[in-house]
Image (tube, rainbow, N blue to C red; front, side):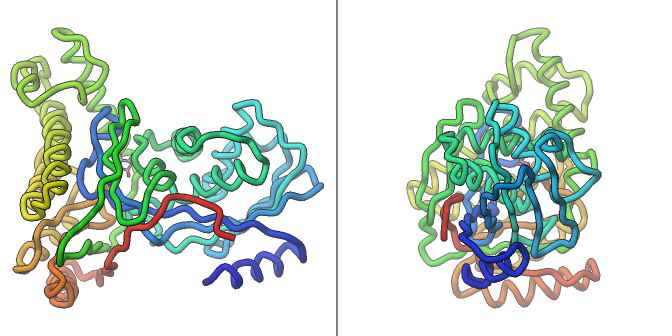
Length: 386
Ligand code: GLA
């Protein structure tokens, strides 16, 4: 759907008049998984698919919400903006509006909002972050709030915590808000310092494989991992005061891991510390043009997420195993929260067709599910587009 089509849909729904259009992308993370809420590094990039938000300010003292993807719609008065609804998509934009209210921003006029998204839902490509960030960017612009971009990103993350109940890190919202075409973001999730690194793959492409087995971040498994990491920090603090696992080098971990009595929690922490190291190594290799080493580090990342962190499962592991059978695959791993969703692979140009055919067939024969593939283009972060 192009901007004109979207505007026509808006007018059909809400009537004639001016309307502004905003867009924020989904993301794919190249390496650095389950490190963000541990103050570590991540390396995501924004995609060219995402969520559109059309907005018009109105005299009425209420906000109306509609989506072109999902049937539920709502009209909420100003005093209903800070409480979640019962399990509806509107909670994502509403959660963001609540953050504006909490910052003391008062809306003197309401608005009509319409959303349209083309990120596959539940695929682990941050459809929810795209929805949150596009709302934040749109309201900030339409109501001239003057908040800076990182603030909008943080408000979007808070919305996820408070209205979706997922204690996520900042990676997804940051990538959606701060992404840049053809670059990945090397982000220190503790300080929020970041570096935009050109993704030059010289004869290779980023291929996203959707297992079509929905990841369920809200299933509690994600929050369970967050809790296990906190448990590890607490155990280590008996010997050395740390704020988060991201402060430890692998050598530190070797000397302190004995403090963690629970073997499972120790493995979780080992994943985090080793993944942070792999991420900074991978970025250094990419900058030097060593794509092969970058790919090996991606593979090691997946193996650690499978064995130590246990967030992969049959679908993601099968997809990665099938991918690694293809000669032109430089690296392949799960991406995002895990427990279903997508993998990301770096595939030589000449092997992309074969990859899609063979990985698709191999995965289907082992799981009975037909997967989907997207050759990713790296796009810009959220902005006004019309
Ligand atoms: C989800 C969360 C992110 C991050 C990833 C795992 O996408 O929203 O904050 O923790 O999982 O790396």
